[in-house]
Image (cartoon, rainbow over all chains, first blue to last red; front, side, top):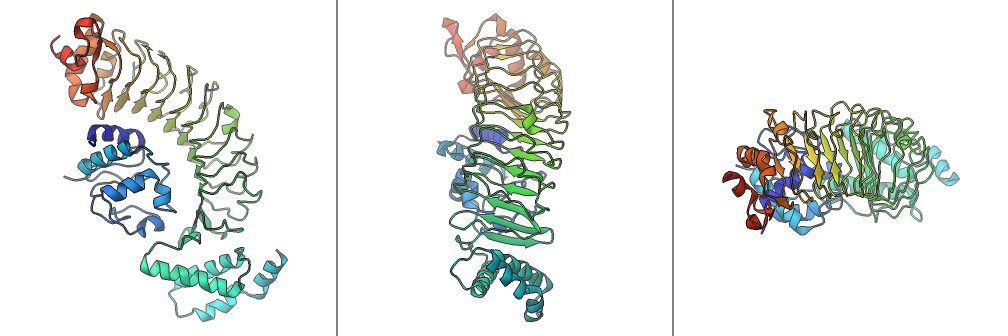
Length: 105
Length: 379
């Protein structure tokens, strides 16, 4: 059972250095993630993505995020995101559960 | 080598191609020229060099027109007004030379134990270098001399046991250095000399047992320091002397037993402090004194049974504090009078408490298993 509370901690520890989640949150090294679910890759307005990210062409959802967050550089070769990935399935599930809630109203 | 040079001089891309592509948009023409020059230099053994250039170009334009996943046998190349970005993973081959305007280079998931000596020759504008998931054991001390504008160096998941002296001699522009998941057992402060502008330093997931004094003393701009998942038993008390505005400190997953009075004193503006998954049994009463901007404090999964009076009240003073939360779960708390301060603080800040269900009393016997928050509320 995915734990959004655990996911929030994972986000703060491992993602918040480069990303915000709230509506209107600023872009940092990485894009603000508001509106992520259901959106095509590379579409957060105002962020300068790599060509690789923009042309990946998938829709972000639970399954695509599960794959991506395990090994981002394998999923999007050419990405500039420096993150080795979350090997534990449960951690990815928790993080995705948190992101689902935190990036939409 | 000679054959390639002869080919390059007899086939001047600019002269020939400018007429061939004169009806194309200017940006396409520029891209074409750059790519032709680059493909000219590729080690395309066994192919007719002219055909291979056409192949690469066709491939790239088909790809960019349709937005499909590029051919995995070729390095990804893209071009912007700032310069070229090259990204290579197996089965693509590592190019023997790179476009002169390369600003982004990723060579990842190969089994390289060494880099070619002149690997970065000819790319003076390089800004980002991603070399993760190779098996690099050694770096040449001169390896970064050709790229003084480098801002990002990612060496995650390699086999480095040390860094050569003078590696960062010309790296005054380097902002982000990631050495995560290597085999560093110790560090010498001299290895990092030259990194005047460093903002993000990641040394996590190595085998560091101790840190040298004065490690950060010249890193005035350091914002984040990640030392998580090493084998650190103690920290030099002056570890955080140097940076003027450290924001994030990750120390989780080490073997720290004590949090002393002095460690955090140089960083009153610290915002994120992760001390979870250590062996902390003792925290000094003044350890958090002066932390005015703390947004997140994680002390979970340690050996804390009690805390000294005054520890928590200092956290309550700054109005801003702990906006993101705190976690003291998975500690063997002894729920007696010594926690009176903590109880008051908990009740006032319970909305920011992570994992209440996992924050329980280990003693005394009568309260064993009770939620700390419940005990605090009934106090």
